[in-house]
Amino acid sequence: MSKPAPVYLDHAATTPVRPEVLEAMLPYLGAEAFGNPSSAHKFGRTARAGLEQARREVAEAVGAEPNQVIFTSGGTEADNLAIVGGALAARDRGARMRAAVDGSAHKAVLAAAHAVVHLGGEEEILPVDGQGQVDLAALDAALTRKPGIVSVMWVNNETGAMQDIVAIGRRCEAAGAIFHVDAVQAFGKIPIVFRDLPVAMLTISGHKVGAPKEIAALVLRDRHVTEAIIHGGGQQFGIRPGTENVAGAVALGRAAKLAAAEQIAEARHLTALRDELWSRLSAAVPDLVRHAAVGPHAPHVLSISVPGADSEALLMHLDLQGVCASSGSACTTGAVEPSHVMMSMGVPREIALGALRFSLGHGSTEADIARAAEVFPKVVEKVRKLSVVLGRA
Image (tube, rainbow, N blue to C red; front, side):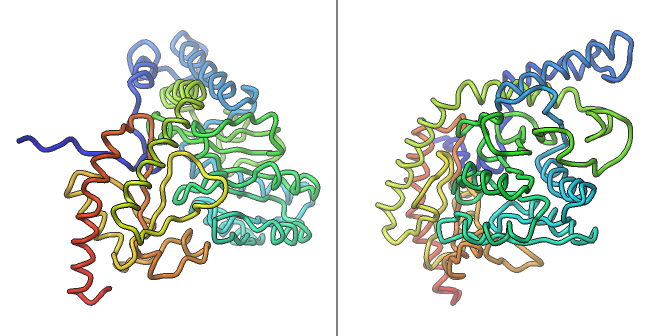
């Protein structure tokens, strides 16, 4: 009997490139459209046309104008451009070079805030509650200290918790702070209309929505909210200089167009699959802990902990059974430590060490859910027994 096909439930980490996206980008890697988009000859003009069409597609997908879209090499660069560049721009305006960031945000955001300190500025970490929601009272207090830039992750990559971006944005507007939103996990899962949001900068990333890695975009309210953090030619208004990745931009444009068109149906489908997965897993293992279960939640992420089990062992045994997921832990210098997201939410260490994330995407099916639910209780039983034998329970 042949082995079942692997079940991929790690779409929040990355997604496969969609066939439509690959088809759109391939010509820009070939002989007809390989040119430098800054060149005046035919090859350059062809590349430029593809680049600008991609910019229009991304803008339309997020409800922005094409001249507000800045392509970057990934979400990490876009977040750094927003936070470090935003802090530098604040300093140039005579404002405080201070970054206030969501404590459960992606490491790209937290590291960028640390970089602001190294450049002579200040940082402040905004606490979140047990459901992963930014503490609005703490935000109000932080805003009295006049941060130049505030950054919040719309949908958390580990738990799926959704922030109230409108409420946070209005507070930032009233305080005169520039507001950046990391929408990498939000895009394609919830509606985004940039022009209607109290947001100055917004990050999206291609490889979360079926485009290749190393392409993303930072959407800007205007060109004065940030400054370049790398320096070179005048491409992209001088905000992000360097020869543009045309094939990547074209891929992001097509992926963004698809994601926006399919968002409502996709959200409905993924919500049903996620709820079915939780129902089956919790029925089979009744003492599971679900994280960020109360309050607004994205449709594609299920974050749980298995008490009495180690997440790395669970992942290894799930993988052996053909189910690919991810953990809420990070391996640092050989020692498994709870993720900063779990710690920021006040999850007890012993529970956080057993955290798992199942994340769904465009290709996820009911058969994937059935297979994961079939193998999960057996894996939990095996890992718990091993934990007892090894004295880790």
